[in-house]
Image 1 (cartoon, rainbow, N blue to C red):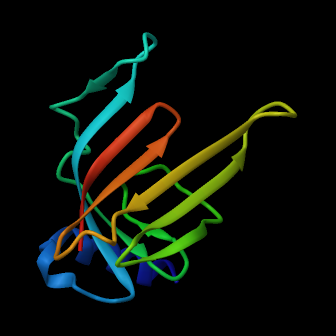
Image 2 (cartoon, rainbow, N blue to C red; image 1 turned 90 degrees about the vertical axis):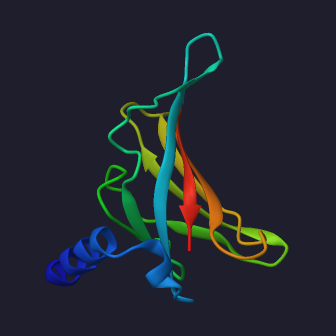
Length: 133
């Protein structure tokens, strides 16, 4: 299984997005990286090492393959996306302490006509945006 994930990761990095128009996967590339500052404004990181990074989303499960995000376990697909709705996945993980939780969220605008489809990934104060096919 790890061998398969490694092969998929290598393929995701080596092949352009346009080569992946598969109905079971999204191939995504990060176009911007930002975070919410303490004063509530958005700080865009133009020289972020994440910009240009690629990852794969398995549509049916929400599993992400690639090194762009930290390991995200137990994805929950909330909406599979169509011509009127976004594809949506969340990850919930317990944080230290009894009442803490981490929630990560990925939204891919499946309803956008044509390709590629814009995405937003939110994790705490982190915001990644980009395009998926």
